[in-house]
Image 1 (cartoon, rainbow, N blue to C red):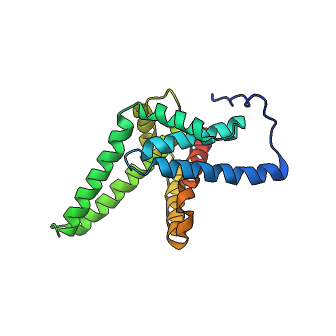
Image 2 (cartoon, one colour):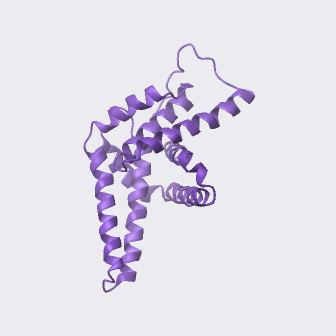
Image 3 (cartoon, rainbow, N blue to C red):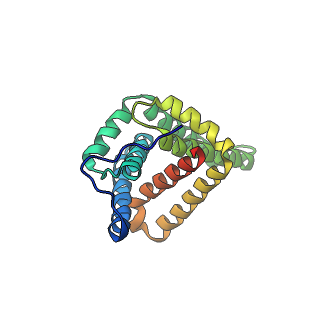
Length: 198
């Protein structure tokens, strides 16, 4: 049974208008931090895991997200090689499949559909794995649990696919918001994981 972590020391619970103003700003900050840490692409999973942990701390213990705390979580996340290998492998496979499709391989349409489904599955495992990762948890365990969650909690998986589609539309329509969108995706993933474990 999961227990709620104690509230951060010396911090009064925020309520009313102040809480309504601070929450979007804190989620936006997490989005910016995750975006910047994801720029090398291979660090995107580690950045999402650090952002999810920071978001959970914010909602469970009223801890204000800071650059220093995000950096600490990111370094902890990056200590495990699989967190860099998984995004690199996914990018390599996607690139090879796209090259094969562009070259006009036989059965290209079927390969394209299978590739799209595989990429959706990999994306869901990554998003859900980032939401399940916590400091001290092995990424291999988080990703294995996430892979099982994709089919077991298919409603949550559909919610995350919907979130990715909506955020993609927002990024296309209002590119200025792109920098904070990863924070919203992390928020959606943490909410889905919290819903499936409650």
